[in-house]
Amino acid sequence: MNTTTELGTAPVHKLLFKYALPAIIAMTASSLYNIVDSIYIGHGCGALALGALTVAKPFMDICAAFGSLVGVGASSLLAIYLGERDYEKANRVLGNVIVLNIILSAIVMTVGLIWLDPILYAFGASDDTIGYAHEYMEIILYGNILTHIYFGLNSMLRSAGHPRFSMTATIVAVTINIILDPIFIFGLDMGVRGAALATVISQAVAVIWQFTKFMEKDELIRFHRGIWLLDKGITRRALAIGMAPFLYNIAHCFVVIIINNQLKRYGGDMAIASYGVINRMTFVFAMIVMGLNQGMQPIAGYNYGAKQYHRMLGSFYLTSLYATGVMAVVFILGECFPEAVTRIFTHDPLLVTGTIRPMRIICCSMLVIGFQMVAGNLFTSIGMAGKSIFLSLTRQVLYLIPLTLLMPTFFSEPLDGVWWAIPVSDTMAALTAAVMLWIQISRFQNLIKEQEAWIASTPPEPD
Image (tube, rainbow, N blue to C red; front, side, top):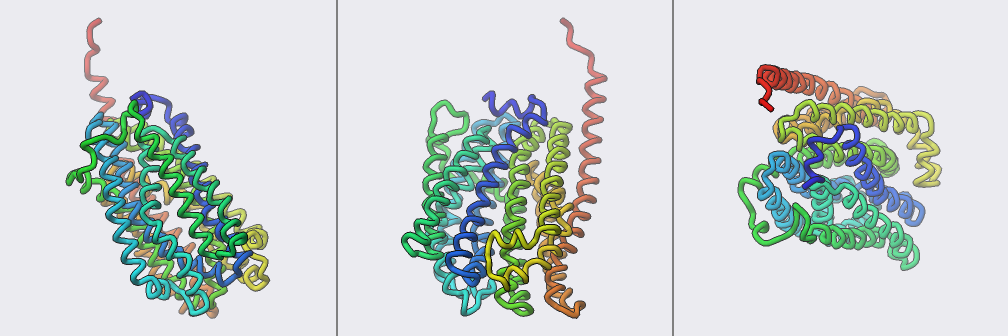
């Protein structure tokens, strides 16, 4: 009880540090899944295998999108219910997360396994990369249920007031993955299958770790009878809130499909591999921003539910400042040290040379991306599903897809048009988020003034 109520009383900067630091450590560690797999696969299986991993990533993102549909929505709803002190509904959210994740992940696994090769070809696979991509995704799909439950419960742990336990679960998974990767890839000569199997096994261990916390009898939010039956109200509201990150991930997947196909058209498999290297470098820092967002989420959600709008806005301002600083590091790395960054993933001279220019192009807009990510997360955290959905789709659907298709026609080297479409769309999306946020913050500030006026007009209670 004390752990959750502190969200409405403790200083915001201390709360953000307490909740965001474990989330940042967890998300940074989680990003090592992709980084470690890429490094081992790039050096152990070659540039084509690294390109195949880039092709497989949007499919993995689609699987993750269904997990975020449940996990992010439910964790935001849990924080709101805790702020409203409705602990019965908060516990039922936990049970609904497990049941919904099992149902959705089973559907995704079945559909994915039936149409695996056609999906991978649609995502940009060639005859040279399809074998690697198939081997990797087949294992990932078999472990999809574990993946969904793992990410869903980690979100619930943070909203339930256990950010450090959530962090530990992630570190356990990443550590096991790092240990198993070289054993399976090199020791057992399993190649990309070994990398996928290491990921699934590590997540299975993490799920067991998470279950131990929610089974403790002295926990406010825990497993017990009566929480497993799907509640229409909870399910509908959680899915509505989670629809924003879900649609963002789905849209991102289609964007990656289009970018991969445009890159294959104008630059071949090596251009796709270059895009994969850049994505993995930026992904590490984007995960830090996501960790900041996850730290902000329970603070913003709880204080919105408790009608403490000044605390909610304070958490947003601090998170935006830190997120901008994080992405400034990406800007410096991408603009000043692109060759050194690329050599972390591969020593292939063609891939190294071909990645330097596109990395500089893509990284030129990094200074606005941190703010954009935090702005969208604020609306998700406080349950404003419609606005969150709109912001999630602006970059992907309104800007990036059309620009990726159109801009190559305006460049003498069409491949440059594909690369430039990414930073241009990022800048336009950030401007859109700034306008929406300014309007919403003005409304919250009016509510704060009304609260202050009411407090000032209310006579103090007699001693």
